[in-house]
Image (cartoon, rainbow, N blue to C red; front, side, top):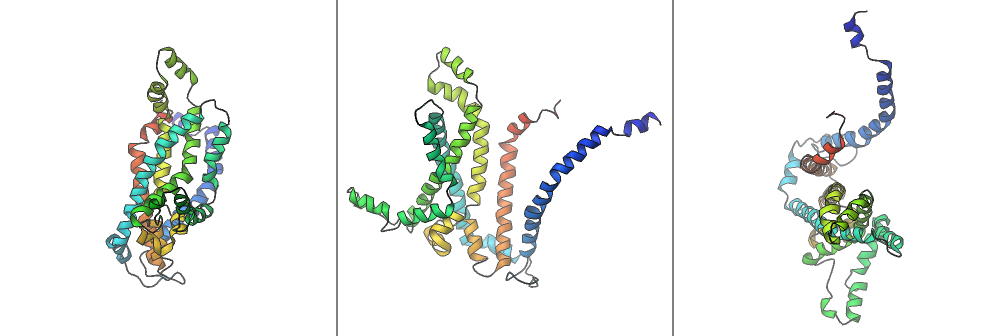
Length: 312
């Protein structure tokens, strides 16, 4: 055997490693392709038809569904609502979650109980959350009744139907439900920061807030960026809370409709599944572009710092 042929032959350990990787990742790849990639391809295909949801689609309309989406003012409003939810979720939940995480990271009595109470809304079903808040925020609900009893009757309003207030009611509900996830995530990030750094800063004369600003927050940066990414994607795909509280028709008039509720209202509920699939593809593409852009410009340094084998 010539040296060149011997060099081309891979050692048995290399083939064994490749076989193990294939065996372990194969089922996950199959499931991903079957339940993610294939449905997206089929949705894009059905989006070219005027399809009623049964039988083989035959009424080919080309790009008509996609052009209708881009020209529809109702979809534009839903897109604006999603953008507002994305921005306000980051602004409202991020700082509050960081402050709560810093507080709960201290040695306080009953902090385990407080952590549980903060995290409970996140694990409660969206149906329960939506139903409960919709009952409390009705015109004759608990919130207006409480305001009346404490002498603030002038503050009572229609929290769910007033277009100038409904979106803020939605933000209150979203923040109450999902801030627990951010707090737990930030607490996990704080646990990975060595206490010796804070102790050294205290010895050097740094105050508590100087230590948090100069040491804790920069080291917590990767965790915050991961949470922001998850929050952005979740806000773009928001559906259940809006649909449960406002319903399929009231959401658009109250100013709380989202791209997902638009998809269901104008697709399944209207019997035009081809159009609904086209909306789903547009929503997927918007989320994909934002995710790739965020990963390229925000998460890049975190991923590069984690991958060291290639640099070696």
